Image (cartoon, rainbow, N blue to C red; front, side, top):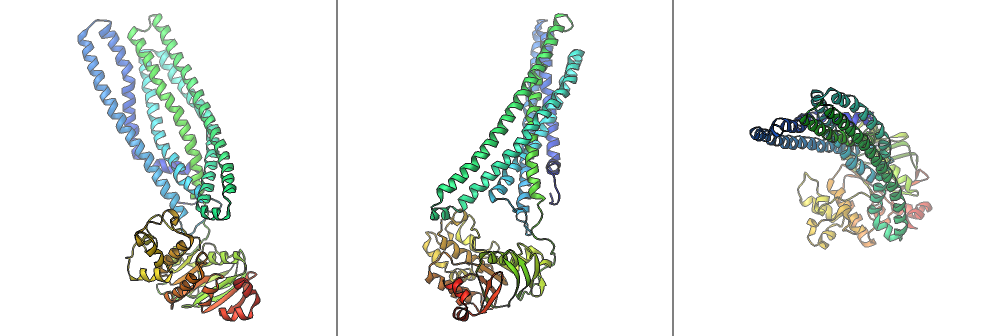
Length: 565
């Protein structure tokens, strides 16, 4: 399923089309099952007329044997049909999850705009599951149509008035059920929106739990989540009320319809138009109709919820990219020279900056917004509103974003560690745990972290690295960036949570490990800036000063205030 302009209807159609063979197989087996179900009351009527009324034991045994065979067929057809339908629903949900995750992870970004991570997770799980379930609902709907059709034919053969009642009344019931599902669809969409918002806030709070505790802001955080959760609860209750009203009204209409069939059949039996066995069959068929008609009520509810979820998935899949263009490959031999010309974005206001190849450059800022904008430009998370950024003389906008990020790695200070061992978080999946890994760990002073863990590098770090302290996480993250060994490495505040002695060791290790390769350190840390070949101060969105750390600390007051204060 591709991106671009998608609607909820497109998502539903693609989901059903992808599972068309399984749905068709399940529907065929279900139709066989419904045919058998409808034959049961017909055969019972035959037993009453030919065996019971005629007191014929032989015929009774024969028809009971036929019923036994029929029930075996019913059991297997239902089992195999339901299995095909459930597999189709799960496969469709799986494909949708892959599509949503693939869009979120697309190198050009954009899907995460104005959405919390928990909201995206909700779309990829709950909404995908609901859309996948539409396949099962459609299959069940086909079953129900087959059941009603068979019942109508059987009733027509038994009594024309009873058959006509079914043929004329069923479309009316279906139309009423569709009308009743509309409020449910609207409220289901609102419910999913509120639930996704609550999930997003919860994920946000859990991710920042350590910071919240440090600030003593737990009570405010809990209150924020309580308000969001209450809104979600109210939306869920409204959707539940809509579903209960829809189900209740559909069942009432269905019950009245069945009662009408039974009443007409009873009148015909009293007039002698029907035999006792035919009356039993007619009532049995009327009762059998209750199942397909109830199925239609369920199908309507599933379709309503599926349409609402499909619309939410379509919004994510069709979200515009954060950066456009760029399909040229990055040259194999990257020198690593970066150049910014008149760059304007966020806090940057026409920045001109040269970052020489093979050198360690420190960048200090007086406004954190400048650092964020600079990192976005260098990592091509966003393109400048004006100006250009070049790598070895080639504008980044011409380069493929995925390949560019393999050449220019921007290691953000708030990057996440993944579930698994410390080694899994440092060593690339396609690389061995070799001497280079040991060097990277030592350069980031993460080897000390390894020694402190009960199982060394094989120790699990927990979700998001929560079993580690803030300083330990920072060192592991830096070791991961160093171990990746890109031609150009940009790191942002890699030592804010470590002590001064450890920071000095990391500064020396970073310089030694990256010797001869382009490295940019965006930080106000004196220890890191002191080992840089050159330091640039961004002040007021422009380059305010350049030189060594010692020179700027001695001669530039704004630099001293930003770095040494």
